[in-house]
Image (tube, rainbow, N blue to C red; front, side, top):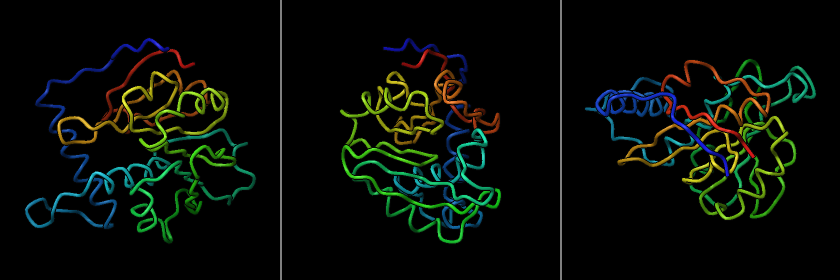
Length: 198
């Protein structure tokens, strides 16, 4: 099991401000416009997670060889049943990042991800994630989970539920091993962790 050490700490007040701003931005990403908290209801947990997943490619660089062609799509795969699938489907139509279309791929329980760039492992697949992440440890796939031990198992990003909010946690060692570069803009709103991936 990986040993993780926090290398970035904020005061509880600063963390709440950053997370609140991030939630508002996530809501804006979903509807494509700026959102006023006074006018609009707060997004659901699944809407926020979908917004993160669809927007991660803006802040991540993969090795060039993971794309077959210049215009190859960015494939977001979701493993297991999750309401996040419905929310992703609502927002990806016509969406592109750096000229690449975003495509959703649904995976059944235990199914291998195959070609994908972002892999979301739902909480329903938590028991299978250590074995899956061990198989993918050398693949350039941005692995994203939502369980407390996801980073310790070698995952790159965890969308953790903390005090009624979604906190972004990052395992930089796992990202380095996958040859994935994460933008400082994304890291600035995350609880950055340092550790060795499996």
